[in-house]
Length: 286
Image (cartoon, rainbow, N blue to C red; front, side, top):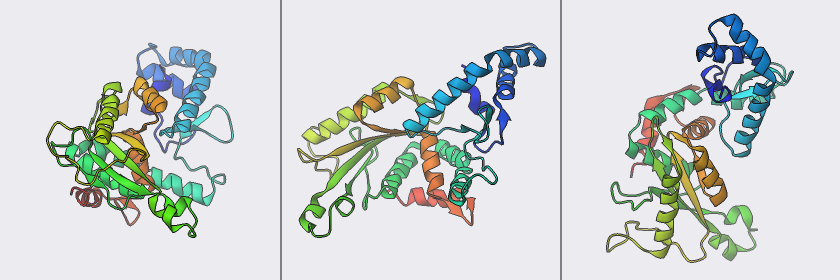
């Protein structure tokens, strides 16, 4: 349980602290001990297990491409720091710059949680553009049939040599997604199943209205499709398992915030600027 509370103590840019002192603070903050001395004693007893669980959690998040706000200091196995903390004399120039970009993570996350659902859908369409889709499409509000944004990614130039122009022109994949705006909530398996069902119905051309709600979504029988599930909130553990086992791609609010921070969307003169990011979102509102 203490591992799940580490984000309340260690921020993404926090300097190194011993795992034992972090655990003692969590124990005290949660009221699991009546005094600092008792909290310190419990932390000493639980420290090894706590660190083992931290390593397992970090490994799980990294392997899934998820954000991990903490990391182990490179000089020891018991010092914990924020994952964007720059280690003087250790981190390369490129790594230090990447960590500086991630420092803005909390500001992006706050922005994601205060925009409205339609603006979040537009932001997701903008992310498709960052992924390489030339003309990302935002579906009409209220008529999306379970699909909020989509587009085709051309892979020819990356996978085929220039001597095969015919092959280059047909190597494409669809990226089709659903946006769930949960400022403080959690997405679970029903929402993910809803996305999968919506895409399968679109592939079959089956809709609840006489005409298609998607003007340029024509999925051929053998077209490869990536399913995208984006949310401003969190995703339940069963939800992550379903995403992994189904092959769908999920990004929670933390991952989206980190992605925007890494790409410096809405950054002006080295600082996060909410009005600039809002203008970028508005530019994809269709």
